[in-house]
Length: 567
Image (cartoon, rainbow, N blue to C red; front, side):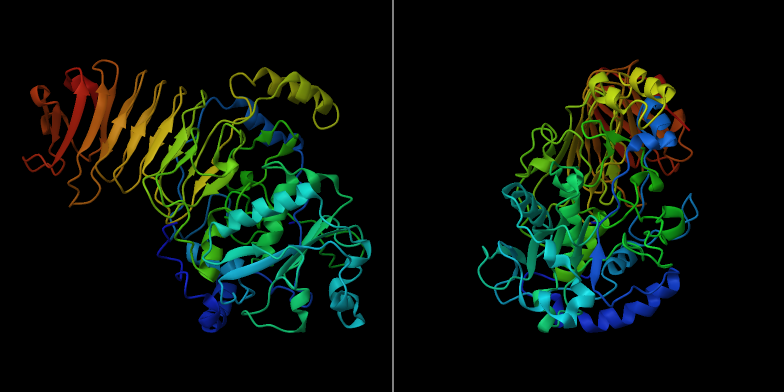
């Protein structure tokens, strides 16, 4: 079912695992988080977490389809800081990053990692025995094992990929036992267990007991065909990654479970964002452990045209990263070289290669180096936001008649079909806020393609390249290098604090075509600006005191005052 580390998270290095420190934290936080967010206490009797509801066809959601067919470009930048509080646009309270991370491990379950720094796993080849068949544990495992079959070769490969996504985040590493000896996590299929998938959580606070053989095990319903859609963004791959999240100690974001049946009528309770989400960020956008579509938190509705379903997360998302690193410590060796994500990827994972993963819905964690987010392969409008915890928006797969025709009359009306199909060339399968950067991860550089793009830097020195199109570039803090590329580009500047002495450089300014936007300099007018074309500089009296505190370097043609936008 269903990096450099952030200072807000309590992270530990590779040699200090949380089982030595965790008891106090679990006891302290219980009352605090329960009081801030009204939610029921989790049912602890079974220790089992169910899989996510079947991903609904996006085409059943008229609002999302109208947005998909009608938008002409990227939305304005939205950002939730790690300390954000208050109430969001939909009436749900924000959770701070610290609250969100603790909430995902509110049960206190985790593995006490062995002396080798391992969490072990295996794929069962034979029916499980022992405790699985003990009447004492019948109320926990039920008849899950009666319908046992082994994972296929394809499932095993997909599970290893999902495990690697978690392994990249945490200090311990996953080790396959190859069916030999007891493992922490066992994978198996069944047709007598969960409707879709389920997993048992680890032990409370890392303690061990007789139930160790059961805890952490993952069950996949072999009769549910979508469980075998193992492509990135496919339900099966998302399911495996989600279930492994449970198997290493994460709960759902809210107190819900697919199998809940409070009135005993044999029909699972309805689960909705409005009724069951107790924090704003309870959506796929922030956690793969959520049940709710990213549209609930403001991301644009969109679809994977190849599958006909709403796209689901392909990796652990920003809150998942914070939560597992809170439990186990961060892996400080993950991609510490100079890594490119997106096009021209060097990340070593296909999910981060946008020539192969054409519908990305993911979060990037990176432990070091000088890194790049490259969206240059897209010709439609993109948003590139390098702040940690931010989401970039990038183009996805295109709808065509062959994909849409089988869905007409089944999932939406002729009018909706026409709106989607006729709008596809202007905005085919547009993705919104689908590429996250983990809190604490620093990506230095960014590139976009030939659309009219928005690029926003972070607090370090960035290189931003807008490519072709009429782009908007804002390096933010740091001494940044900005390249607009072909088109009419706008370079945005502001002063970030009284001690900001950074100097930005624009590499390709063209007078009468490009603009400098000084509206971020409060009160600055033409009289407060000195253009020095002889030295390719413009000086700004940002403090309005008669001296020039800010300098911007530009290369290209000479500048005139009309090239500057004032507030």
